[in-house]
Amino acid sequence: MSPIKIREKLLAFIDNHVPVVDSNYSNISRKSSSPLDKEYNVAVITGGSGGLGRCLAARLANRGIATVVVLDIVLPEPIDRVPGVHYRQCDVSSFSQVQTAASEIRTRFGVVTILVNNAGIVRGRNLLDMSEKEIQLMFHVNLYASFITIKTFLPDMLALGSGYIVTVASILGYLAPARLSVYGASKAGLIAMHESLTAELRASHIASRSNRRVRTLLVCPGQMETVMFQGVKTPSSLLAPVLAPEEVARRIVEMLSKGREGTLFMPCYAHFIPLLRVFPERITEFARHLSGMDHAIDTLDEGVNMTKDGCARISESEEEVDRQSA
Picture 1 (tube, helix red, strand yellow):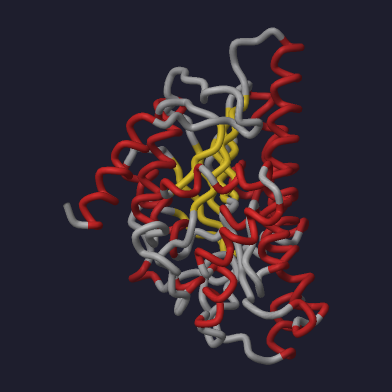
Picture 2 (cartoon, helix red, strand yellow):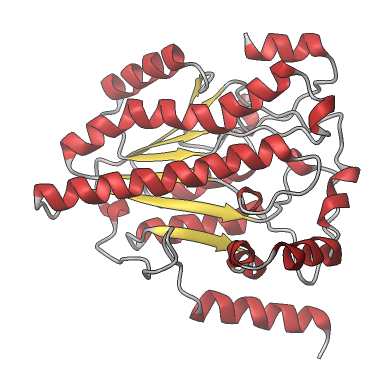
């Protein structure tokens, strides 16, 4: 049997037999009636102009969600927009801009019931080679923006007694390669935020003794075939295949349609990365050496890898970073 066939069978087995687990690795994701069946659903996706965000917008729109709104700092050309999806220019790392956008969405469409925090940027450099503004920008977009959107949209969900918060992190939040210290730290922050928020919502739900509640889902994918990581070569296409964003979007919408919570790991190797934390450091070092992960970023295309809210752009100069963070 060829390696490709072996990989396909292994992936199929993982998908069918390995349960999605929640953040503390102890409980199988809970099932309930589909939150996507409600006629009044309004979904907001940050960074939805390209990559995974665009695929999610298309999937949700095709799923019959009444309203899908993309918040992005740079909007796609009309010809590149997903039919039926609404687009609103917004810097999601700005509290005032998110508040203004939320007010407009609430007035025009109603209460947001599905929030997908997907916006992200990356810069593949040694920490000492990065400017202070680059570091700040990455944390603002990758991490701080999610706190802003949750604080903005969650109160209405709680008042309604229904909602879904999807946090798109990364497997690099558990194990980051060299030259991605800031990106990995920001994704680790998202994972910690999700865990704490989920516990808060669970405690609030138990205290209220209500059957209605706000659900959470954490998404930790491996490398995806998007502009954001253009030029990066996976160390092993067999052990660590590059993910198609369409497939990740399909799995996310499938989880939402089943009312499931927890953590979605993709592809199969991602299920085991968090377990490296419990092993001695030498084993982790051996795994890093064997996978070649610390050299994977060497081929990252520095010309297009500074993306904000899912949109690729050239950002070679300090002046451009200043403009983006203004």
